[in-house]
Length: 416
Ligand SMILES: NC(=O)c1ccc[n+]([C@@H]2O[C@H](COP(=O)([O-])OP(=O)(O)OC[C@H]3O[C@@H](n4cnc5c(N)ncnc54)[C@H](O)[C@@H]3O)[C@@H](O)[C@H]2O)c1
Image (cartoon, rainbow, N blue to C red; front, side, top):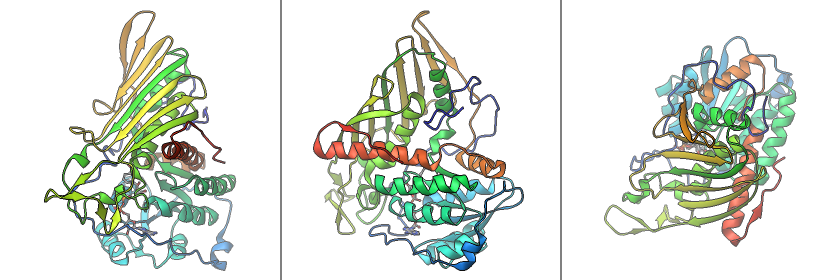
């Protein structure tokens, strides 16, 4: 049974049915000095959706998709490659169209991944797709997601769902309405492929650690310790307008994992850091494409959970020696749950206070987000993490940003 946090606290362990795992480790690690093919600064609004009679005429309550599933991909950058590769691994999926604000990029992407059609606009892509993957920079997710949902297209949207809570609420509303028509909407919180998380959520739901007291969790990368090419690399992630900072980029994964295990957050306190970056020639690097590197590169969050207990979450790009470290420790009155994805995606260490013993549980590997999405579409059923869950995480990010700005504890606002 879904517990409202996008995980399952049921009688049977969630990983009782072993399934093949698609390796998606380190997807959020930017290749630091790879020249970026295209710029994402000043990303214009997505193309407007034309009110096309042909599309409204196609609106229908969707039956489970039994035959071929036509996948359209919006955004043809680094992460879109993972979408293309992983959708092709799902039975009956065909890459039918792609769309990018940069037509040359879309053309190259379609050639590389043998995609039949480069869409001329969103309407064109919608008409050629049953399901749409949104893999553009965060600020453009909302408009694409709402347009696709309203056209009854299943949606797998990249994380974080949006760049503001207001947009996230609009997507959640459209997702609720579309869900009633049989449309599947999910967010690609890719570390859901770690069965450690769903198994820890199940163990927590079983009362294995008693009452929640303390959580400490971290998502650590170290690539900012290196020097950078002023023109490229992953510096777009250091601009608020394009990347949104480390809180949004990595914090959304960590918040999804932690609250997926222990439940909702009541209020937060958060501090941001933004440290000087250095160019390859040793000079200070303060701007990218003429704009200041103004986004947070470190975020320290203190959380109060709805179920009681407190948590400290850290995300940083300055963790020298760390490539993509994710660790979660959950402590309660009767025990602890600990996992470290550097060590294993599929192990949870459990401490039992009464016996004073540590044991390791090894759940079966979890399916990838792409597999869960396609299974949900084919099965005509709802699956987590859905777009409403994405909006919930956005509400946490929003409270953290408010707190970082005004230095005070902030209540989490509603996301629907
Ligand atoms: N789930 C994960 O582990 C993971 C990992 C990496 C990135 N991501 C997410 O994927 C998304 C894309 O990240 P990326 O690293 O691939 O970025 P990227 O810069 O490599 O690619 C973005 C692409 O979108 C295109 N684009 C920009 N604005 C557009 C618009 N309005 N309409 C259409 N196309 C547009 C760009 O031209 C570019 O081709 C982001 O939301 C990011 O947070 C998720």
